[in-house]
Length: 334
Image (cartoon, rainbow, N blue to C red):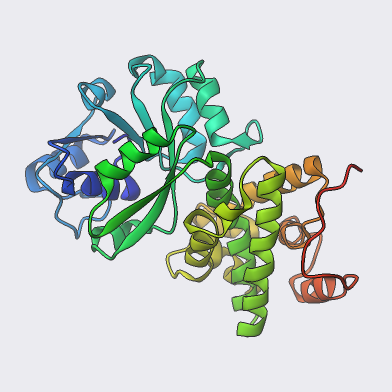
């Protein structure tokens, strides 16, 4: 496991619970944290209240983590993944299975993370699986039943991850729709900011239910236009993760929306916390423009973040649009 943060710690524990796994090597840069994990089976900096399996061994060298491993789980921030692979890709065997847990789009190139991964590696045949779904790290470690989806071009790679990580408390479903899974995991973030705006504005469940429903439809439309399967958005990587991020108390994106309604500036909010939905919102609009899609909710959230639309005016902006069918229009060529 590459990354000893909250999610890296949680996934290391998930892997260690498997009877198919003898040992889990977790790479972390902090020597003190590594020592704490190895001596006391606790990560001093992340999720320190949880005792970890003795099968987890923390190491400070990437080579130690990868030596003899059958799978490499990437549990580092999305924007750091390509740079890490540029630096360490040569240490990965061409047949080693990569399981990427980062949810996001690569902002430098406005592309899917899988595209950035293969570009950084310099090869497109590296076994690759994207893991996504509603999965707060603390709840995984509390052994609250959690379900995720693992997607790969080749089903047998997804099945490999499924069998290694699944347990009575952590269930993996397989998919071959990498595009849909990655889009769902990334683009639910700006939509969750919108959910926070609704909550912070004191609007009721009518508004929230309509928002979540129409947001998921916009995400389905964009997914299909980008080459993914819209059905994926109806699953764990789409609506499942959107519900988690829109309603979960631990959601930074939801918190951002709420704080904006209180008059805080986006600059002040993002100085305190990382809000993935802020930069991802502009990428969503870039994708929509390239595909000729209207996507009014995505655009409204983005306009609020850019200061082009006032929060108090957004309901008139959306509710005053021309009336139409519930079924959204397909992409145009214009």
